[in-house]
Length: 271
Image (cartoon, rainbow, N blue to C red; front, side):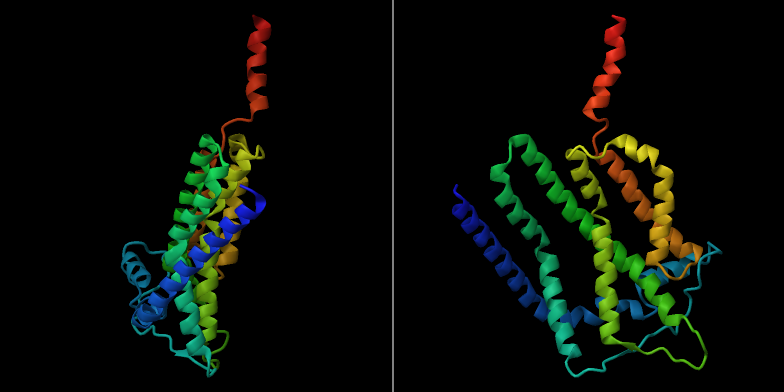
């Protein structure tokens, strides 16, 4: 295919993706009003599944923070005339993109695969599938773990008894989107290391050498993500971040080709 043929094929790929996103976004317009309170705003109430689980767990694990406040209920305020409508639009679009991710990856794979050799195609296909799966897992960790812990700490933090916390819809949605997206991207680290390994930049000895640094780095990253500073929140966020390091170690190549050749040299010399 010529350059213009490739460009035309890519244009139709984008058109099909846009049509899919718009279709699912329209479905989002119907679904979002029914799930907005129960899913997107769920963390503002003590009935949220994470709070209830931690409340039950605190009866057996003494060092857990107190999540037993049954009266925990945060009121969300709207201070702008257009905010609710724009939130409706943006949430429906986000719903459309999220539901279309598998199809987007399929379209990108279909566009790239003809230019690859058979062994390369298998690797890229695995990368697309694994990358999409890890992004979804990261978003789920962000929704069920990171966002509710950060939200509950910040909304209950008091600098002075004379200050009453009032939360706007803009502020809630901005932090909701940001933290979940950050966790989705963080969970792409194994895919990034896999690509670096295929480029010959990183191999498995790198992970063995810097494992201690990874523990400290995971702890620092968790401290930046969770401002509460309590040991439980740090532990809950540190563990999945560090596990990404260990998963990455299994995905990269074992040894660089030069080292493998050097290992065989002594035996050849002895012979």
